Amino acid sequence: MGRQENNLEEIIYKHGLLNAAKHKNKANSGAVIGSIMSSEPDLRSQAKQISSKVGEIVGQINELSVDEFNNKLMEYGIVVEDKHEKKETGLQELPGNHKDIVMRFAPNPSGPLHIGHARSAVPNAEYVKRYGGKLILRIEDTDPKRIYEPAYEMIPEDLKWLGIEADEIVYQSDRFDIYYDYARQLIEKGAAYMCTCDGDSFREFKDNCQACPCRDNTVEENLELWDEFEDMVMLF
Image (cartoon, rainbow, N blue to C red; front, side, top):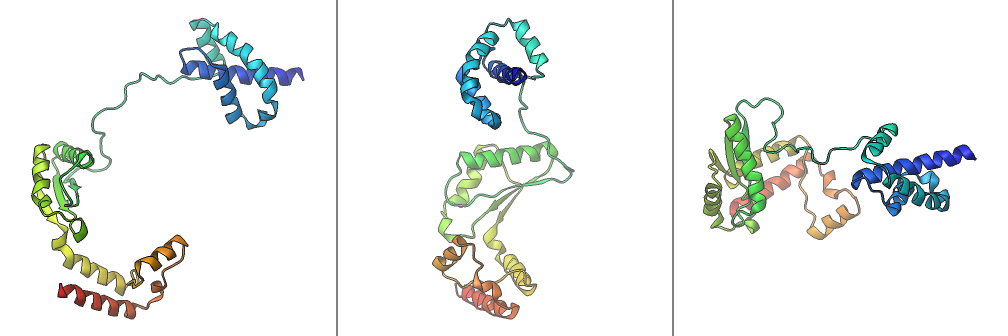
């Protein structure tokens, strides 16, 4: 019984030291109890006994001199991280080969750039400067609902204000033929299918973790639907 009691006191002492190390060498009884209960689930049945001992042990810890406190940390094998350690600042080194590096910034033309855009564009532009690479501005304008016509001019102007000039501008809407070609290739390989479900039905399948029934279409059926889709698109 005496050995169990000593072990309990050692556990309390260790948690007390840990708590004190985080708060200028002054432990808090409530915080120490909480730490023990959360990290030592086997001791929860002894909560009453622990509570009665914590106050006394925390008092002992808080009366230690700086040297005594540091010696106790060493005795219990506790390593305290230096909170004042300097954090790495600036751009981190990119992994891999940096030769002919290409970075891209791909906003929707839905309005002027905002701070979130800047957080993406500025680092990419800086990496291009560091490694002598190429920056591509890719305008994601394949969704008509998100297009604000003046944004086509506003985006490059906003980038210029940030000190960024793209080496190349790509408009995704100019690349539809490429996307259509690859979509057809995927269908022919059986790696994609045409879905004709309405939005509500598809959402219900998704919410219930059910596969869309259109997945069972044959390659021939999917190609026929794809041709109908392309014909419909050409009308517009």
